[in-house]
Image 1 (tube, rainbow, N blue to C red):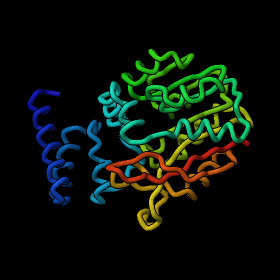
Image 2 (image 1 turned 90 degrees about the vertical axis):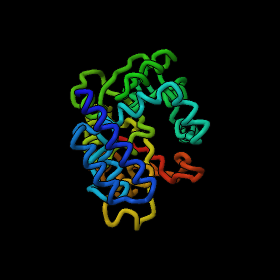
Image 3 (image 1 turned 180 degrees about the vertical axis):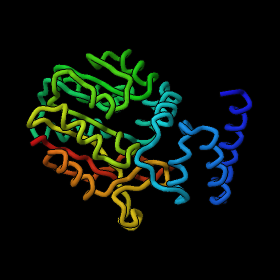
Length: 270
């Protein structure tokens, strides 16, 4: 991208953010449209912000470029921000629930959206062989430094799973992945192709009051993250060949001091 394009993109994005913060959502929407015209790959997540403001269609997923950029930028402070500032404890909630279910020994785990290794660390002593996968290269480098995984990849989850030739997994974890996806069928089908019969698929999701979905199975909430109805997640699991064992109510994290409601799903491959 030429320097002038970089300048124009920064100007349009800053203008859009300022107008959104000021409450002029129509003007912000026009500015985000300018952002998308300058950056079709959408590194800044303009499409997700438009959906969050109810000024654009709900996309099928957050753009890859946006997710990778977002997490690469925050990799160095990720653990502190997520755990200490946002009160994110889903990996430990998952560990606790697996222990209560008596599911504590796995041969091969795949940690989708592994980030810096919070879930890998929480489940380390339950797993013989751990593979981690994330879109953000800087996050994967930090996970590598922690020594929690036997194998690490920088890749999109669905792309990786569709091309994977490795041995199947008996545990797939995806904590904090669904908030960056709208449509779930591609991911769930890809997971199903890479697991043993009886394998567990464990993941968190965020949700909103029923009226916020306006009849849709998923939407983008006020913090630019996808929320899903529990019914839709259950249907997508069933279609992919998983039995939903439970969908426990959890607080996924806090945003601006407010608890974000969600579910912790544990499903078994039929």
